[in-house]
Image (cartoon, rainbow, N blue to C red; front, side):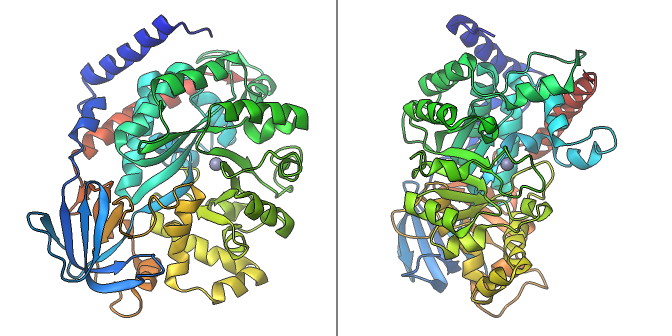
Length: 498
Ligand SMILES: [Zn+2]
């Protein structure tokens, strides 16, 4: 589809108007304006897991937030007129980082289980639903799902956006993520040109070919539009990234190199790509070209390998030596023959994070993924050796300090350190079974759950307080995503794949 500037502006504007004025959209895109301003704040008397090797844990410590950053860490701090938050009896830790999530899927939590009797697999589900989203739906899916992430203590993530391929959908998807107030990188995938719609009869082979196709002109125009209209600079809480076509579609190295070269002309903060090495579950031509990328000099500090399970030590060394990041998805990796790579990658000196991945199928309680990552290590003897040396802090590393490196936010977030962005979680510890002994990181890694999250700050702005999201009508939002999801899935069910 050719999109003129005029048509695009018109559609985007009407999408926003529709969302803002519709009867079911009380929260609207304007919800973003309800995000409070960053205030000078002193969190007093908390038990602090700084994740900063120089600071360690501080019992009964104070943290001063100023101008969206961490201004001071210590004990007995004085802060004049700062707002005081009583952190006594609570644990303060860095906001958690999700290195790989398909954010849009928060629209359809649980749907993969619910539809299993009628729809064969995840890819068919995507093929049905992706052509039924309106731009308003795209905004809503991204906004609502990112709000869910913040609610679960995730303050920064990499969004692997692999369903909203037209310019209208992609722009609204990006804006939804930005409007949520979360930090991280929005990665638009340059592929998929489905030409069918609800009610059509389509050969499944054709639909799959469209899904796996490489980029065409419409994708590059969309990338240019996103750069012109949404991501004009390099800074901002949400940065611009790209995902190449799925698994490079098994294409020749020259085609992969050409795609990568064009991707990099847009200066993406992150180039994120799924690479599975578990050949037992996927066609060998898919996801397995990683070994070709190093010698072809296509790897670099912008490159993020997703999954990477089954990678060899030589490939991990290639990652380390080229500054390549890895986003393992510890709970999602359980269904593959090889265990999650995060422990081995970390031991090899690679910037490794973890992530929720399929937000529609895995719990959003991110502490469960942290624990899943730790216990995943026990699937191999090597992993057991790695795990035997772990403290709670090591388990938390993947979602804090090292996690920040795995999303190219090293030096920005991930530790409670003066000068870093004030991305913080204050956790309640008053549940009867919450431990009172051991390092604070051990207690959190073993026992914390989403309902324990009392307060969330992103860039010094309070997003959750007293266990409730601030400035977000959560009930209304749930009603909106339920209505949209129901409609999209009903429409998707009318597509007749043959
Ligand atoms: Zn994924």
